Figure (tube, rainbow, N blue to C red):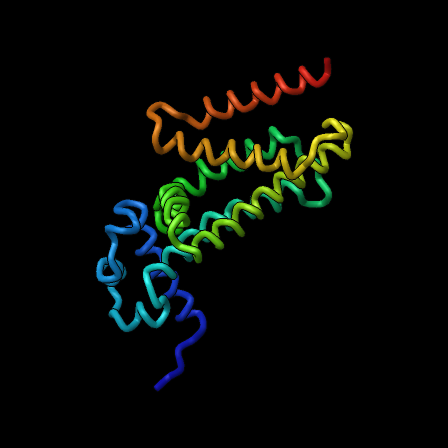
Length: 208
């Protein structure tokens, strides 16, 4: 029999993951079974289990999709020693969420719905808690690097701890995700307007 190519394996894995991600986003983790995922992707049970041994493994893989988009955003922001402002960094990441994560191009799923479910599942699953910790430490570190460069350029008080500011910036992003999902009338434009106003007020206070 002919050997299965690496591209074939990658395509099948993606096919399964796309099907699982769509179901997780609409129905939630607990209401989606492996049988549902097998039906959705149209492959045999043996084929699905060949690539993913459990629903938990699929959940973890789904959660990674949003991180890749966030990483690409920071890579572009920080490329070639650039010095983006905190406002630019927050705007770029929130717009990435709005344009690329809410409507994920691979499967059309809203990956923010998966992210919020991961937060809840991480409270009971040590494996997901470890994954979430790695992801958010990385995001917080990227925001801290933005502050570090902005500080080196003389735009931020010297006694500001970049890691502390990075954590606060990450909270603003997580707050946007939660409000967009749970609070009627939340818009990207209005949220960013509020963030810019807060940052401008803080800068004015520091100047005085």
